[in-house]
Length: 54
Image 1 (cartoon, rainbow, N blue to C red):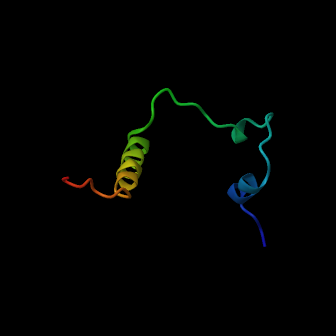
Image 2: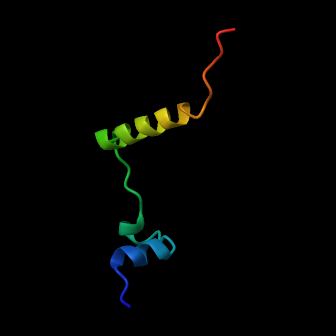
């Protein structure tokens, strides 16, 4: 069974000399990332019970 490059990259430890394995920093988050974070935040808030009116 042949492994893909992505499978190999996900199973080997990070090599500091391998520029492809390093995370790339972004100046600003993408809109997709912000949307996903917002959905996650709303899902998190939905786990709390509503405050009583007392």
